[in-house]
Image 1: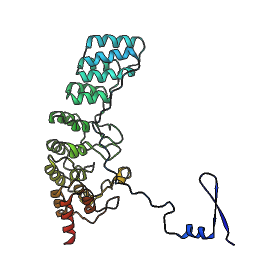
Image 2 (image 1 turned 180 degrees about the vertical axis):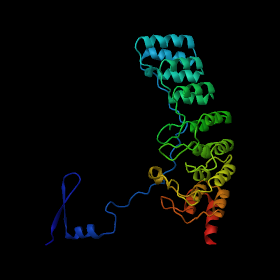
Image 3 (image 1 turned 135 degrees about the horizontal axis):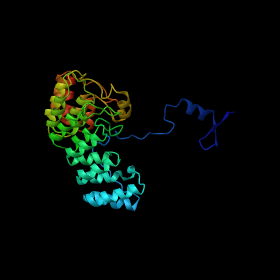
Image 4 (image 1 turned 90 degrees about the horizontal axis):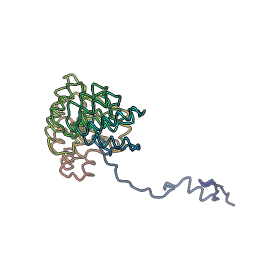
Length: 330
């Protein structure tokens, strides 16, 4: 007579099975839950550098009126209204949006007044000044405590990155550099302003930032990977060659973020590989050839187990796939 086994289920009920069924469960090579679904590879996360959210408005109707005056650049009326609010006991912190509105309007006098009464410098106000390329406003913010090398968020580097993303002039980039901005400064992720420039900026800006760094600089920010994987055709070849030349001290076969554990753990699910993987992903045949000639190893697998050839095939970059296949067969 077969034994009966009681199996507890997640719903606090029990299921009786006999010896034959127990043997099947214990020794079968089939998945107990049937065929598992196949998921598409996870793509690149969106870039948050330069992404603006809609500026909120105050819940206080009196403050909303002043915010509108600041946005309109009505300095006299706004100043009088602000003084009235402060005399009534309003905390300067509560009128921070007024500072951003005044910066958006380009009213240095109003910005100066708000800062002088204790309104703290805000990220939105600095971004507004960057977008307007206002050296006056940015200098005011520095004078009132803005740390130019402070990260914007854990995954977004200092605001020099925002300036690069916003496609500002070389003159404004030079202002940042002359006021202590470090192109090699990171956030908690290994991302720097130079990372932003290499991935999305103009060649002239990349060159400007690299020239500013001392010759002995050990570059952070995964520059070679980002240059190889740059998804903007404009200036691709020039930026890639420049970064390859400047980052010669780095291992050309390094896995992206292998030297930065936190960043690697955050991003490995998307498939972190070598610079060759990145060039294969975006279909840059010239970069693939240059990397192989420089010692890149096509047999290395990324964090999802794929070679550069497999990445090229997945992305339907057939000319790159043919090149890698030909190299491996020789």
